[in-house]
Image 1 (cartoon, rainbow, N blue to C red):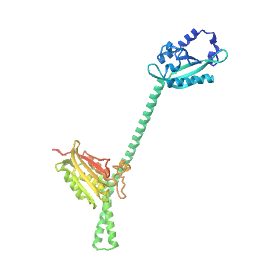
Image 2 (cartoon, one colour; image 1 turned 180 degrees about the horizontal axis):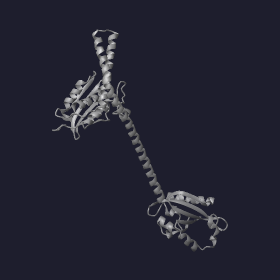
Image 3 (cartoon, rainbow, N blue to C red; image 1 turned 180 degrees about the vertical axis):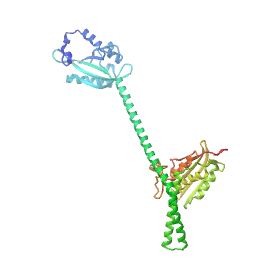
Length: 387
């Protein structure tokens, strides 16, 4: 009686003819095979032959090493040895196999012991499920899930960024209302303080009294500068464009700056280049960028300003040899109310970008300099009708 075959134990295989058993196996849809203790195929069905791409006569009497790649055959043999040694069913959840045409398959194989009259294991019965398509579908599903997770993460990041931008815009809107409402009220008392300082200076105070007046005047000027910066940022009015010399604007901006000793200024802007812009707004933007460059070189350095025509209109490059911009600061360089300066407001570059954008241009930080910082301003070139 054949033991170890589950429900098939009720059948007396010893009384069945080999032809009947072969015919029975041959009509089963799943690939099946039988091996003897010499690991030779003694019975295979049509489904197995179709799967491995060989005729039945090419398989019978052969071993795995005659039919498959050495590494695959060695693995199959190790599992056969395990089954004959233990006399127990061996299940391989996933194993690769290459057919005669070179196509790869993934199999799930169960190897069952077939026992003789005395209970000895005489043969190995292999039952195969070709799970190649299942594995492909699993791979596609896994890729789809990964892609979905990536897109969800990207979208989540976009939503977080949009939320942060919305919160910031709401804060800036509130700041605009606050700045507009308080500017006049603040300037009035600041003007009174400034007038009082002027009167006290006429009294020819000396020593600590004179130093105190200088401090008051300096802080009043700083407060005026902050108010002016806030108003510039929240009230970018429509530009009044006209054709204007780029070199003239650059020279006026440099003329308004206070350069520390040891700073060299190089200007390379052709006289013939004209831009169609609001000169006041553009000079304000340039001043903010140039002032940052000068403040970044407290121990001296070189400020280089170059202008040229390009396919985008006009390009103006402002470059310094100062302390440079860190990777952390670069991410928030144009964010309002963000600054690394102890007494800064953090509106200079963001205001400058808004003013340049109002002209139809761009202000960008261009990384890559060996030292210092480099900014590029693009502006529309002059035309016959500039408005």
